[in-house]
Length: 569
Image (cartoon, rainbow, N blue to C red; front, side, top):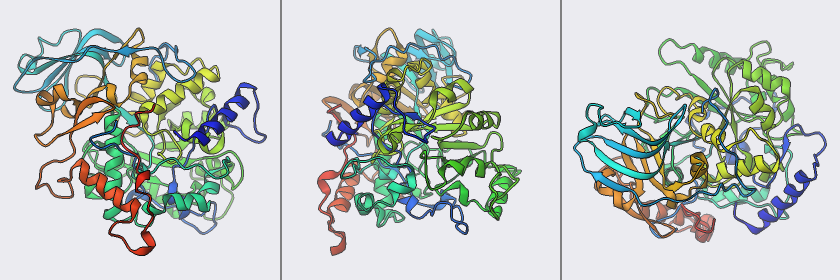
């Protein structure tokens, strides 16, 4: 999202929005910036849209990841929740918060951790407040004072002087592509739907260093791990889009698709056109929803990514069982409550939004990527008014924002530019926490600071009258601490001794702020969990450059490796 050409294109689109212009035939909101919805990435190349014989592929066994660019040691609510938070954002997505005083370790302890600061509880803001995560990794207290809770007196006590939030939840990404930089067509242009850019030779060349071997551990593992690390340093603890079930990603942050370690793997997803789901496919999905022991509770599908051509406007009705073609599950709707996670949903009509809401579906909104690729996004104002659950996801680095915090700022700026009063800082925070948990089907475990939930927590070192805005204003340098199940994976170096998950955590320079980051589990850990940050960075550089690869894979693009943190923004 940082290229000058893309920025110029964004300004052109923004001007059209301000003038009230709309492209003919589109049902999505016009967008205030040129980003993209390149979710499917190389995966779409294998998905022939609307073919009468092609079958939808369950990507649970595929290797389409997302991997945001990285930075080695030297760079840089719920659907029923209140949405009344301030929307004091500027057109650039900032809300005017300022850096908070440094965090202090008030007391060392023997088990668990108590965090003191401004606590974003599900139904209120506690200022001051405390959150106690017990030695079992679960939240044991959320209150103004947790000192009376059994075990709290023996826990580490940190006065964060910041904002304490659930870890962010990225409801849609292709994480193994996130070491690749932004793709900008030459000449710059927009598309009508995802099938068009996916077939563009320039796009294919852009992703080729990864796509050539994306199903192999040599490429997928370092790419997916780099994407997880990018998410981690930007306060994200769960991501949807890690669809390859390889042991190397049973590590780091949680993957909503596989290896979230919160019960069994409950999600299925498909990258192909939903119009290619056959009678047999649909029967398989329906059966999985009612499995007596491990039912599928979420089916994530790319829905109406685009606004014209290639039958993209027919996708919702096909998914809902109204496709007149043979062998397309006519009469069997896959909008089965509450299983549907509808990604993008750019062209849904008001009637379709109402139908999805009645079926307890969720929407994953990726505004930055949508605008980059199509110059418009989903009808978010209508969706907000409908009450449907809406989550956020930046999609991937080739077209969307690099991580969740930037995506939240982008969405806020879009709301300001388009006068969407309901798109407040608080609502965006809820999309990225409680509503995100609901969307990916893990609402019983994460997304809310409540007793009994898992201690996936992010602390932001900013202060201001709007604590939700302080979250949105944060960069990697402001992310003071990230806990996963009560264990520190990233944070200020001054908190490392009291919070780090193991002795192998490494120093990390977040744009001049000294941090620690936990990458290596141990030198002898299996399944590549013995790799350091430098190991992963070197593997990706070699892939892009061609070092150690055959002549046809000499790309000489090592300098394009996207670092974990962008210090220019």
